[in-house]
Image (cartoon, rainbow, N blue to C red; front, top):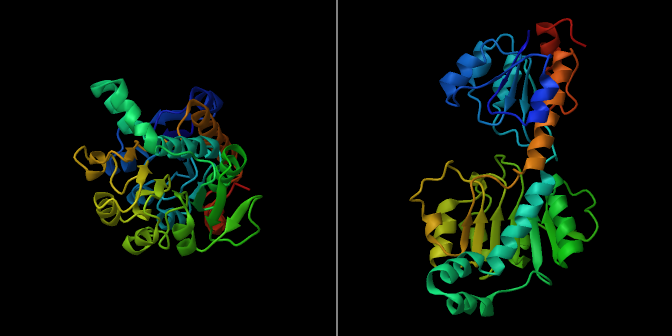
Length: 326
């Protein structure tokens, strides 16, 4: 029976979909050596943790690496291509969950929820209420979205139609923007936005995108929300700006180093919300991501190509490895 290796436990519906199609095995650990060893006899791997390049060198049976989500930075694409392994993902399935997190984070920062809640619990009713006089509403502000994929579009729709925000965006493609979204350059966006949302993929072009110079262009009370990947922000520059009160605050769900060390400076700021890379995780999104990944695995095991194939250039190599496939 084919072996389906998953880096993490799947949603019960996803596991049920794979029953009978293969032997579903959850990795015993996520270090590079363990993943490479346990993938050696795998036919498909479902990915929620970074894969080492060496995994593809020794996994001669491996047909596909399927991302449990949208971002492909956990899969070493060059190594997969060299090995003739298909790579697929399930784009858009957690967009609503991430978009709702972004609006929650913006509201919590504007209403000063962290410090209000803390002082209410430790200092009393009136101490908590003192923070409300400097709280602010969402309506009428400008939200700037960097990256206009499924998440960016969901944020734009909720922001414009649900909260009365003005919406601008910076995107790689200058295709016509969704309704009520204006397109700007990244520099114009950081200058004009009250709330800046990072929902772009991590690429060589976006690494360090929010650097010291761009932070200096932001409004002094601007909020920065990152649901992209940690390296999109220059951490030293952001920490310096927070220390100097140069921006209004930040909500950070992703980091260059994960888990974030408990003594990291981000934990010391009252105007910073830190969450453990959970913006896209809800019961509903885990079901959608899991069943989406399972559906792609079933196609591969049935000698078909995935719907969301992300490296079509390897198909001929793949067919030479598995000549019975279509």
